[in-house]
Amino acid sequence: MVDIRATLYDGSFHPVDSSDICFKIAGSGALKKGLTQGQPILLEPIMNIRVIVPEDFTGDIIGDLNAKRARVLGMNPENGMNVIDAQVPQAEILRYAIDLKSITQGRGSYTTEFSHYEETPPQVSQRIITKRQAEKG
View 1 (cartoon, one colour):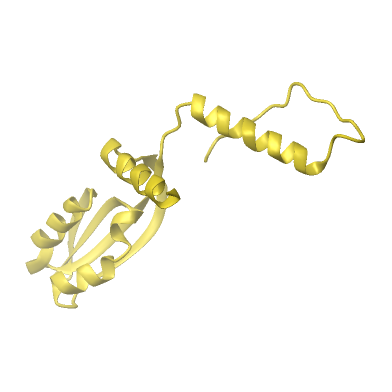
View 2 (cartoon, one colour):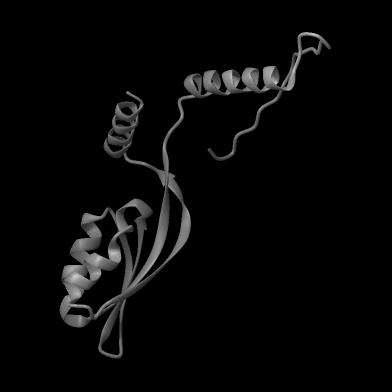
């Protein structure tokens, strides 16, 4: 969760009936109710990725990035290699080293860094929610 703020506007303390755990339970319940009524959205981390590949593999790499829901920001030739800059959801590139090695026959490299959070597309959100509910049983 990001950018959340809560304000307690009513409450009381009684030395016999009040305890630390009671206030934690009440806070947890209030948070759950607020999230249900607040129409939350799922956010996913978006990473900046820079992929350096031989020119022969550029088309294959751009196709692979597009399949991973990436936004290609630019491409620059550099010493017989192409440098591709893109933004891609982190979940899509967790195993990118294996994919890149396979596509470029081990001749490509990449770096990533966190960029920002973005709303998860509805079909991805629904898949995540369904999987989570199945895990709860």
